[in-house]
Amino acid sequence: MASIWEYANPKKFIETTDRLLPWLSVTALLCLVVGLVWGFFFTPDDYKQGSTVKIIYLHVPAALMAINAWMMMLVASLIWIVRRHHVSALAARAAAPVGAMMTVIALATGAIWGQPMWGTWWAWDPRLTSFLILFLFYLGYMALWSAIENDDTAADLTSVLCIVGSVFAVLSRYAVNFWNQGLHQGASLSLDKEENVADVFYHPLLVSIAGFVLLFVALVFLRTQTEIRARRMRALIARERLQ
Image (tube, rainbow, N blue to C red):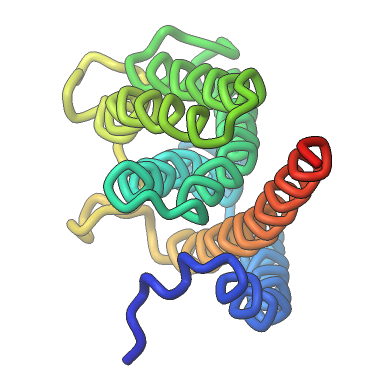
């Protein structure tokens, strides 16, 4: 079996992801359509939350991907620091806007759910606050990449920022466990089956999550390809100026 590090070669990465992207895109679209239509139109209202419970088919997958996108960026950043593979740094950069958009979706859908349930659009709940800080780290990460002209220097500094921001990614996931006084409910999905939502909501939620995961992977592949080509273009322009 070929080493995974061969995909650090930009040409190999583009060739491989070009073959995967059509399948990922179609499967992601299929899962999203099935999961969301199944969840919104073919599941009953909750006996306590009414129809507002159906926001979980957007909120939970988006929140899950917002956190895991940052963790993916952390892994890619560590690979850059240790191995100096440019594709990993560019993959982290490519994932940031996607993760930021997932965070916006999670915050917005959380507010839509919170207003009828809590009587307010926003509360300084530990999980909500750490999630908002995570979003600010996303903005800072993208701004730092844009502010530094040298790609290697930008990759170094954003990797450090990513390591620091990972604290809030973890907090946004486990804040409910750390601070019991928070308003936010516990996890909708858990290894403990008793803590999961009812099966009638659980199965379409899994399909929606699969769609969000595949969509994230497809977008990161596509954006990483774009970042690789943009880096090549900058290098060619810089070479021509020296000549």
